[in-house]
Amino acid sequence: MPAPPIGSDFSLSGVVPVPETWKPASVLVPLVDRQDGVTVLLTQRTADMPSHAGQIAFPGGRREVGEDAVATALRETEEEVGIARRFVEVVGAVDLYRTGTGFEITPVVGIVAPGFTIVAQAREVADVFEVPLEHFLDEVNHQISSREYQGRQRRYYAMPYGERYIWGATAGMLKNLHFILTAQETAAA
Image (cartoon, rainbow, N blue to C red; front, top):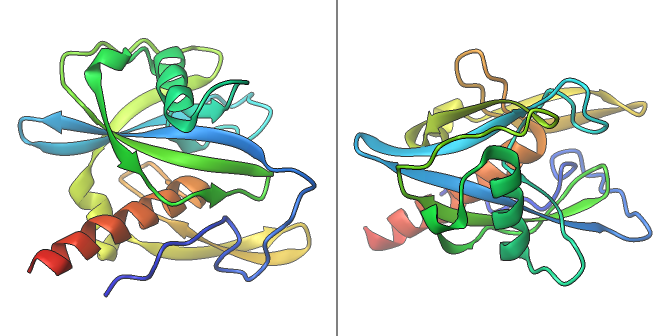
């Protein structure tokens, strides 16, 4: 049985920062329905971003006043990578995820129909790429790594794919998606 969902960047280290207020955010977990299998669309943030520079991420960002999680995820996806809402069928959300930088992220899962054109927002997105969903569903590709952060040893999930180092919050949210999808497979068997 896979591990149950994790709730934050610091779940593996036993330390969860508690900011005065969490900054609400949403990301789209875009599952692209390709002819040869489902892929996960990811971005690489530009090297000069004020936070999480150069990291692999889902399209998403802070919620604006009056938005719910789905509206934010769809708006941010359209702004960052150019995928219009009409290509996305929202199917649900993965467990809430809190980051060490104070964000409380709702990962919204959407099935993306082919036919879209990527238009990366150059200020935020250095690259857009897809990884087969099967890569994330195979626990052989799940790693636990560590490094020192703010004077403490911090452990985190990583799921490298070729030259791409997918880690931290993105890998944690993918780990939660893995749990949901494999738990459903186990229940159906």
